[in-house]
Image (tube, rainbow over all chains, first blue to last red; front, top):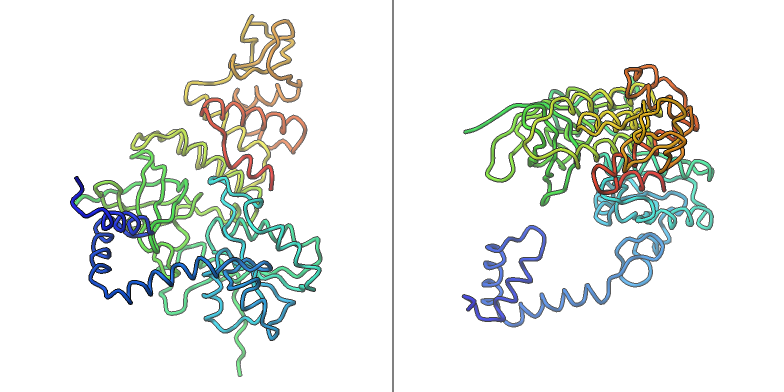
Length: 202
Length: 238
């Protein structure tokens, strides 16, 4: 016989399937939920149901969206001629926080990873290509992660996009602001040197 | 407190939790090691790009119960040229995948590591079409599965070798032929790669024969591993 009542055991099992939640954390959260008022618990249940019912992927850029198009695609103030290509919807949040980008996005929903059997066909690559002409895109910013999968994806996309006649740029690699030079690895420091810029004297 | 040091090549990585990664490293003294690199996905990680696949690194590990923990990493070579060329990166990853499949946890095989480092350096230095097939063939030879390329595996004939059969483990003469056809050029390349003419063979420009040897070596490797190499089919489609 299980040590818990059946509904509690079910709750613990479900919570235990969430990322980063082990059996012990699942147990702790389950007991917390048991102690909650009914209203608080229902609000959480409702939020989960709502997000599953109302949120889907934007048909244009594959960001998470409420309805057909995401907020960035639907916003007429955003520049449609510049598209920033990212791996995951949460990368959009990171780019948005900079306040430096005012164009549209395209979410690939992953990165090329040959060893995991993930190639361009498993990503939203065709969909990106199909956007270039109809939307009058002039620049594609490759904003994939600066790791081996992201770099491979960026190289693949640039090779694919060059013949289309669109300007293809890659975000710069370099040193994180606020860090120490001596901890920089050779590859990063090398790229930072390569991408150095002239400081204006005045 | 048990710390140990070793050097090796990073074969692959998996995401772990919020900002960590499990790194699979083929080391000189400890064979294939799985270790946790904490915080490596943060932009300010002290590891930076050092623990990415293809990197040749000197490491310090802290021995854990199941997985060890990487405490320090210093690059020996990061092969930047590989990371700037999609095709070469794909071919490097194919070699890493084969080594990952072949190597056993905690079983050192310094000869394989030496070959892998050599192959990565060669691929980074110049884009020779035979680096990967030569690596596969040499790896098979090292494992004790050197394909026979000088005499017919069925009758021992030394001339008129026209076919290659993976199941038989080598080339066959016209009378005994089975498996796939082999051109005289491809045969000559196979003999040079396995017979001490490797350095010269690596200088060959791409041709139909180098392509044949590539396909054949990949098949032989897959046959030995008893599974397909995923990166080969991904790169073929890309």
